[in-house]
Amino acid sequence: MLEEPASEAQVPHVQTVVKKVRGTIHVTQNRCKGCGFCIAFCPPKVLHFSDEFNSHGYRFPQLKNQNGCTGCDLCGLYCPDFAIYGVMQKQGKKQ
Amino acid sequence: MTEEQMIAAAPEGCGECLPPNPVEGFLRSERMPHIWCPGCGIGTTVNCFARALLQAKLDLNKVAVVSGIGCTGRVAGYVNLDSFHTTHGRAIPFATGMKLANPELTVVVYSGDGDLISIGGNHFIHAARRNVDVKIICINNFTYGMTGGQLAPTTPVTAISSTTPYGCYEQPFNLPNLAESAGAVYVARWTTYHVRQLTHSIGEALRKKGFSFIEIVSQCPTLYERRNKIGDGLDMMEYFKESSVVKHGAPTREVGIGFQGPIVVGKFVDIERPTFLDLMDKQMTRTLDAHYTGSVVEQNVRG
Ligand SMILES: Cc1ncc(C[n+]2csc(CCOP(=O)(O)OP(=O)(O)O)c2C)c(N)n1
Ligand code: SF4
Ligand code: SF4
Ligand code: SF4
Image 1 (tube, protein in one colour):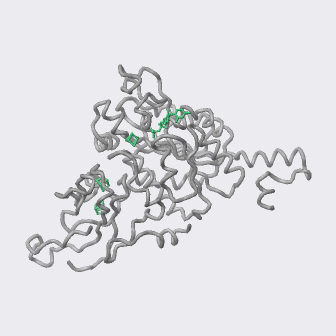
Image 2 (spheres, rainbow over the protein chains, first blue to last red):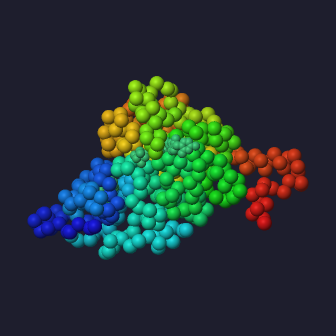
Image 3 (cartoon, chains in turn green, cyan):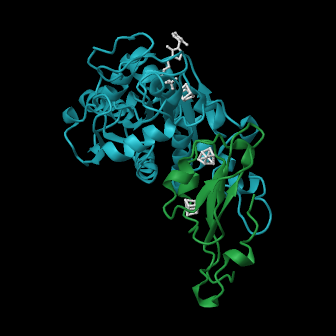
């Protein structure tokens, strides 16, 4: 599932330092077996485990916030369970 | 199926602008989640294989996957391609038959080290010697996963397995060296950590004519890591990351793997040699001249 956009409080107030969203992920939560490869090997380290559990009792990866994911899909390549993939989004999309 | 058809067949992404998972059309989604344990490396290799196939832009109607028995042998059942789950150790003979009967096919053998090198070892060396044009993807997790973690011909010296509770004392096979010595024309080794390099290498093997061999050093957290007190899948991936040394063209006799020791990875062999079919046609034409009407294959194609 896509995360909710970062709340007002998490987004820096000065518009010029807000990074543009360049990529995002899609997670099929109930396929995840919680191995943590995607989190460990994401180059910008933007993933963490959810607080919730999926139907098999595993925590699944989530973006810490909407900034920083490059859509490189390395998480998708590592995932042994086909549960996550990254996609690039159009550059210049405003937060 | 073409790549476009696969993408069209894939389920919708979760709304908005997300395209579907690039590998979804390649999988038999109705069989997910698969049986592999949490942190097992086999799924990661399938991911790389799927992406390599998509990038190679092959007609997927002309690609077949053949597996033997074992956890890795399950791959044949999860890919949305023509696939054969054969008997233990016999993936290569099946694949050889398919290739000779229909040389238009790209035939990929996807199986474990136990299946391919232990019970199937004889088929392996002879297919390499004859340079049968099949691509071998061998998942080496240092053990027989499916049957409970017994000693495999790849288990490193001193490692514990269910049949060597006091530690292995047998010399394991060095798989790239075995493949090269037997006659393989393409030999590479990567680990499940090296996803991009592995994807590239599988692409090269798909394009290569002749017996091509890729060893993928992988993890079996359930039966190898736990018994050897290495940790879980991620611990083994960290070991692959820390202890791998990329050495393209390394002499294969120097790439044996010791227990939790350095792992030399890279492309070791990439040579040209006539294939089994090339040599058969040449020899038969030389002997029979105009009486030779072509291989069984060509006759089949002509009808
Ligand atoms: C003729 C025969 N002998 C033995 C077996 C039992 N058996 C099933 S899988 C396997 C070994 C699998 O090891 P490997 O190829 O390394 O695959 P992994 O499960 O590790 O992926 C064995 C011995 C069998 N199925 N058939
Ligand atoms: S797509 Fe790349 S940057 Fe984004 S979460 Fe996945 S690995 Fe990290
Ligand atoms: S790599 Fe896949 S299975 Fe492992 S934690 Fe990430 S999404 Fe879950
Ligand atoms: S037993 Fe080992 S090889 Fe088999 S699925 Fe589990 S982790 Fe993978």
